[in-house]
Image 1 (cartoon, rainbow, N blue to C red):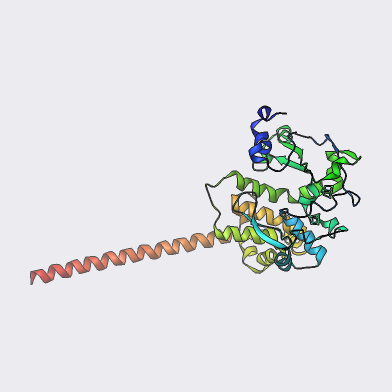
Image 2 (image 1 turned 120 degrees about the vertical axis):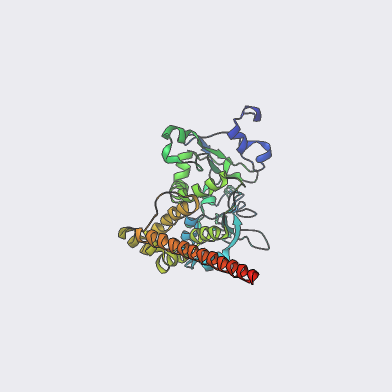
Length: 317
Ligand code: SF4
Ligand code: SF4
């Protein structure tokens, strides 16, 4: 396909200007075939584990902290750098490369030391996915239309010799083998938040408080759990007991819950109901404040009138 033949959407991704990164200009489906294999015997083994930007999703962080036996704050401090996600003002983290050789801290000549828990971005390579519906309201759209706007592409870099190997599979088989499907399911709602934010462009910015909440919920589940159970959160929102029990113990449930909470607070999505008594208390507080300011105005008015009267009397004297 020449660049002239590409649709607008494809140009966004494949056009020369936006495509300095060796993306092949071909739209693939789950049934398209890929000739590729990566294994310790390839001449370029681990060549792709340096000089790269690996953004971590909340599920990546959860898996890596478990793998390394570290609390999130320690993991973040040791292994990550802050960054912004997908050209938005949403804060996230990326793997901190070694200062000297710019390699990933988890790579050795023998391969990836955290291979079974490697991040989503590492699992994807060299098959990328473009999903133009991430920013929209998927629930209200037809299934066919959703599928149409999702496609796959190949990143083919000269140094990667995996394409010379004999193994051939479908994109579907490759993704299942790499554990991408599971990751996609786990990251789905979080990614939709990022894409939705991206679709807003630069017109609106997140408040500092919203950014802090997004960062905390996306990177440190222990901190987010303290926020839920040690603040006035449960007194404010109606959360059923089953959910409370689940998120108290289960990190994955807590992570999925945090995505819902972020969708509600950042984009006004449904799902979090404020308790009736809280609303009543708030209304009472506002009314009390209004009453107080009315009383104050009346008092000021009366004082002004009294002063006027005094001045009139003084003039008559
Ligand atoms: S996490 Fe593993 S696969 Fe990913 S870049 Fe680092 S060493 Fe390579
Ligand atoms: S460059 Fe390609 S073949 Fe080589 S190690 Fe990386 S993914 Fe595997």
